[in-house]
Image 1 (cartoon, one colour):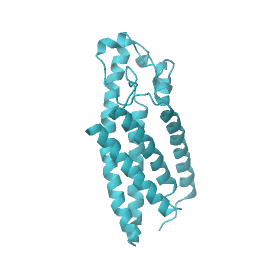
Image 2: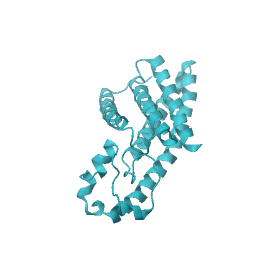
Image 3: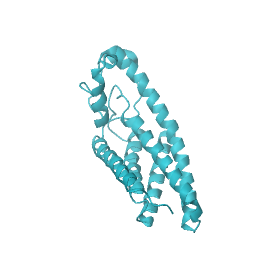
Image 4: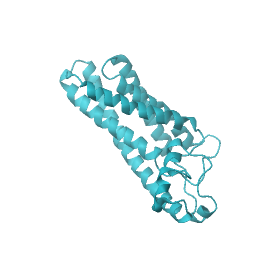
Length: 209
């Protein structure tokens, strides 16, 4: 099996730290809505931004967010109407790439089981597919974390959207653990991978049915 270059490990750990940082802030804002339905565009004039947003959304799309420095994204009713359309595109891409990621996880599970049975010739394939699946997973996450916010925050109570978000906190943490434990602790790596897959599949199911 090929050793991983130390510089790659260092960069990988930096990326993982950044995602952990974002995960902590985003999970703390329980009332924020990632997949809220769009209101009629006439309602944009009444309220341009929701009362509560994810940290990442506030950073980019808040009243003084980074995107507001561009004329195209100045906080106006007309621009917010365009942002809602952009949000829809982000979330559609999020869903499509989510299915691609799920397929990658399933393939990884099959290859991983064969590796545990001594099929070491599959290690390079497993590692490459793992990197691609991780890239797809975190891109999928970024599409929802950085999408423009909805018009209103999610209402209180149990909903498929809230369940999806709770499960997302689990598989996000498990996915980070899967990457960190990939080389050193195989049993924990396997447990984290199964947790990531199970909670990720469940998160997709609750939004589908």
